[in-house]
Length: 152
Figure 1: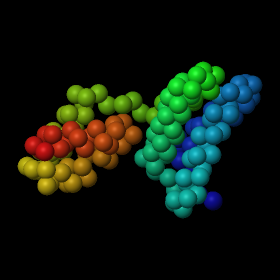
Figure 2: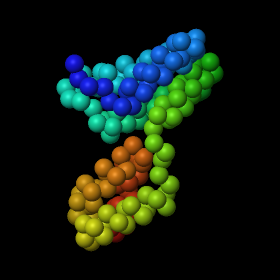
Figure 3: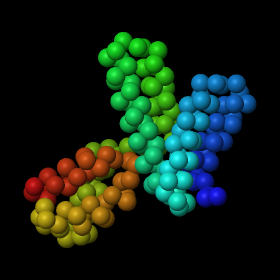
């Protein structure tokens, strides 16, 4: 059996604590998150890194937010509230998002470190930058910022 990641183990522990406390709503939400992490671990056939686990959490949170929007449009406030609760719960296990100033500083540093001067060299900058911002910034936003700073 593959090793559990640190985030998955923390969520499992919290689910157990919720079960002992009788918090059915929290336990059920955490159990769903653990299932998504376990599926990813099995599908990837390797021990998960923290970045792998964060990618799963980010994907699951995005799904909850999309469902929340649809439920609100359909007038199903009860289901929207549950999706909001789960999205907030997922956010608690994710690192804090980078501010636009912090992201801009990281982009500037990566451009300087790689010596990139034009959009054609954007790949080098992204390769250096993405491990630093993984889980803390949207990849599309990072890409757009790098492109704009390289004159694209």
